Length: 280
Ligand SMILES: C[S@@+](CC[C@H](N)C(=O)[O-])C[C@H]1O[C@@H](n2cnc3c(N)ncnc32)[C@H](O)[C@@H]1O
Image (cartoon, rainbow, N blue to C red; front, side):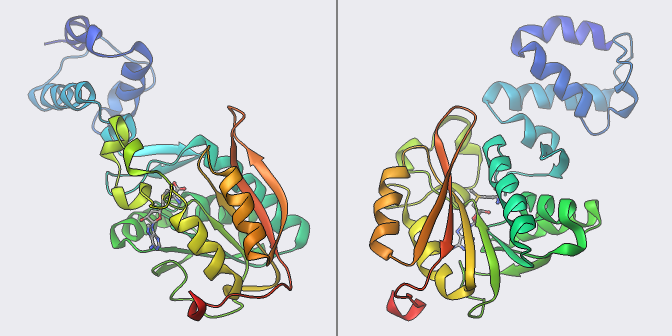
């Protein structure tokens, strides 16, 4: 069978843009890339692969998991269903991190909950030797994917297996950046169901990890250190009162996403009453 015939009989299954994206990016279809030839003959292996892709796509699997990669901050990252697919709004968190590292000449940075390593790797790629970057995750599967991406981009980022900040000493970092799990269970449906629960779900209206990171982060930050954290679209008000309640961060800036939702915050450690892990 020729590719043209297969496409004609399956066009209804795919959105046009998804189909050309999938075909351009499928591993094993290299020869079809570039000048895309519809008159190419599909051998058994290719036909089987296309049928498999059709099945996964029709079931609702995100394209990134079908082709095992996603673009983030202009870089390509390997992903698989054991890590979250990097999102556009997280690029805004990375932009803010790069800006603050440059402006304040920060040198030690942690990406907490690194998943495939997209935040840590983007920061390191753009700032190179100016910054020492750590990336941590509770998930060994995540760390394995992050390692592959580090090799792919030929960068030195220190990978650490840690439950939140438990593996880190006091006053270690100038900046902690995190896109933690913050989705309430009731919102995990549709294509989110393909992504790891561990990467998405948080109790306490989605605020569980955000609160923990702010509490534990205080003691791991150096004097005048910073935290940048991504939040859910409905978290601003809750977080605002939590920050006031804690009293040991100055709120510097809220970060808005492309749809106009408040999706992140930049905080600076102050000399307020400092929490330690022991107090939790
Ligand atoms: C929302 S994902 C973010 C992934 C990636 N940083 C990104 O921005 O696309 C949250 C990450 O936190 C990790 N995680 C969940 N619970 C954790 C914990 N207790 N300690 C450390 N990491 C945790 C998950 O494995 C997941 O990789």
